[in-house]
Structures are given as C-alpha cells and as structure tokens.
Length: 565
Image (cartoon, rainbow, N blue to C red; front, side):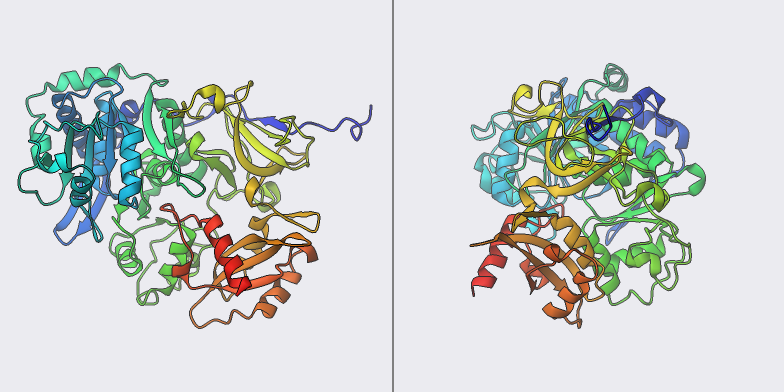
C-alpha cells in the first residue's frame, strides 16, 4: 500500500528522559542543595529598592530557605501542607517557595494581579494553611484586602486564626509594615517562630521528598475562565529547571545576569528565568513590578546580559524616555527579534532564544522545542520537536482519532512533566484513556515530526468555509513598522460565519491607516486571511490577564461593538 493511501499518523515521541543531558536531582530540595553545592559563594540574586540593595549568594538562598522551613514547621506545617505565596519577584519569594519544599509542603503561587474577588476564589480552592504575602504591591494593600475578605484576620491573635470562610487557613505572615494587632505576623516575627526548630529535622524532612511527591500548585492565567489550580510533582518542575539551561545553551562560564520583572507565580517565568539562571550559576536581577525606565537603569547598573520580558514590555522599553541614553553594552543574550537586540550600544550579533517551542502550565512549560540559535532550515518557524520523555499527538477534536501528518486538529501531550491533575477534578476527567492531556490548542505535525501550534481551537476563525489561524495573521501584523500590539479575532457575520478583524495598537505618532495595513498584509497572506477590518485601539483598551495574555473574548466583543457603531 502506498504512503499516500496510508499516511503516517500525527503522533511523535522524543528520546527517553534518561537520555537527556544536564539533569540533576529531581526534587526542589535536591535542586537547591545541588546548585548551592556547585555555586555556593556566587551571587544568586540582587534586589535594589529605596531601602537599599540586597544581594544573596547561593549559600544565603539556602540559609534563608531553611529559615522559612523552620518557621513553617514551628507553625505546624506537615507533609503536603499547602502554603500560599503572594509576592512579587523578591528574595523572600524565592526563600518562601524553596522553604516550603524543604518543610515537606506544597507551595501555592498566587498572582499579585489578583483582584479581591479573584484572591477570595484562590484562597478557597487552594486550601492553604499558611499565607506568606507582600503587604503593599503598587496601590494594593493586601493586608487590607485580606481583612476585608475575612474580618477575623483583623481580630485574631497571630497564629490563632479560626475562619469559617477559609477553614484551613491558620497563619499569615507578611513582608512590609506591621499592622496594629491582628493575626498577621511580620516577616521577622514569622522567622523568629522557627529559631528553636532543630535544623536537622528540616534537612531530614527534605531528604524524604520523592520526585513523585506534589511540589507546587500554580494557577492558569484565567484568559478563558476562572483560574484552574494545576498541581505538579517535584520531577516535573525540576526537569524544566535543569532543562532550560540546556535549551539556552548556557553554562557557569557565561556569568549569566538575568533581569526579569515577570512574576515567578507564572510557571513560564519561574522555569525560564529562575531555572535557566540558577542552573547555570548566574544571578537574578529582580524588579518587583515592571517600570520601563527603571528596568533600563537596572540593566545598565547591574550589567545585565540576559533580559527576559514579555512582548508588550519590549515595546515599553523601546518607548521609555531614557532608552537612547542607557549603556546596554553588557547585553549578549537578547533575541534578535526584540528591539533591545538593536539598541545602539548592543553589539553582540545575532542571537536567537529557544522560542520555537510549545508548552502549557499543565506540563510546567515546554513539551516541544529547539535549543537557542537553532538554524532556520531546521526549525522552519515550527514549535519544535518533542523533548525527552514526551509524546505529542494531534487528534480530531470531535472523535479523538489521531489524524494523518499534516492534518490539523487538537494538540495532545503526555510526559514526565505533565501535571498530577487539576485540583477538584478527577484525573479520568482530564486525561484520555491513553494518558494524554487534550490541550484545547490547534495545530499539526509535519512529515519531519515538527509541531506547528496555531492557537486555541476556540479562536480559529471560520470565514466563508475556510479556517484562518489568528496567530498567523497577528504575526504578520507584528512586522508592520507602525504596529506596537496586534491581535486578530473573528467577529460574527451573517453570510460568512465570521470575518477576520485585526485589532492593533499603533506606535506613538505612527499611522494606523486600515487600507495601508491591509495592503501590507496582502503581500504576506492569502487573500482569505487578510482582515476585512482593521481597528485601532489605545493600549489601555485591550484587557490583559495577569500574565499579559490578551483576553480574546473581551477583545472580540469590543471589536464587534466598534463595528456595529
């Protein structure tokens, strides 16, 4: 039978996990102990603030994490107890998350972008017994938010909270100014609780941790519904922490200095920025909340060579008033596609990050990909090939049958970093009979086993009988010199089903003439993919999730209203 009559199925596996180079201990306590052993007196992090500059070595990160673990044990935390961490990127966040793991608990990372109602939901579903938080984040006072959500917090003695609303929550501690009375310990008071706890018990607890044990509970970004709690094992987290060093092709000799202002409560930034940096013995240059002008000054002062940012942040950095004045000559690892790589003082040549990858929070980031600087004729703008231990398939979203190579369908994954499950959802309602997680994303696998991601299945635009990938249109739009932000949606249409609508935020002073943009796209896209309408928006009109993902449903409704008007 010919290959045409019996095409190869869209299912492909990577090498076995034990063939992956560069992996170390596969528990968070083991990971931190190993990087401390390797890099002990090297600088691990720096945070500059109006109160001064904090610098910790790897040995100090270990000691601060042990202090947190002792305090948690003294507070009654037992095996698998959940501890909420609600902070920006600061030294205490790192000490807290690793400290929870040293104490045998599960770190629950909570977004500082949370509104009061969202935080209420997160606290109820996560069932944390201790909450460690930063009191003031920009204009938010989380101590005030929490006492408003649960007045008992303002009345109980420290360590003696009894709440019918949050029945598992027994203790709180915060970084920041103390409250008069109430159940909230200051950070110093919290750490003092653990000073009588034998250190050897913490180390013994850490030694009992197994790679299969629950390690962290991260939440999805909530771009399509309420955030889902995603429970991951130590192995899944640490494989990615080690892996990202290999994907970036970094080592101790590169002296990585990584600036980031993206929350570590998003798995991508935790694995990519923290994992890459710690695994290669580098230093994290922390910024608690993103401010473009301040970020550029930090990069200059701390001689940053590896900046990690989201697309909207690159645009803001480029538009900052001091952009043309700062010295960024230390930058060596800025992707060639970002504005920073073309700053007048940056002369490191073309460098490409491992951006040809695909992943989810459910797999604690990437499942497929290529290392940095992979030649274009190898990656061909794909999302990469399965990483060690992973299997990827593409199925018919209605029948679940694996489709032939080249045919589009739903992306499904399984492998060693796949989550333990969603909290509150039976595993058999999440995985199929073969153990695959159905991602809800659309794409295809080519003849060479490369995955091509095309966006959420629910976002695929069906216009006049043809399917249009909004991602493809948005990527073409992003190349237009006048476009700062681009997102493409489908808006209902009486005869076509949907029409393609481009929503753009133009650069300041740039023209956003719809016909000129459509003409630009006609040279790059098939005619049926060219947007019927191009709508210009202000940046503050486009709603983002806390992880800077555009809320497609909100934008679709906004575009529809604009067109009706």
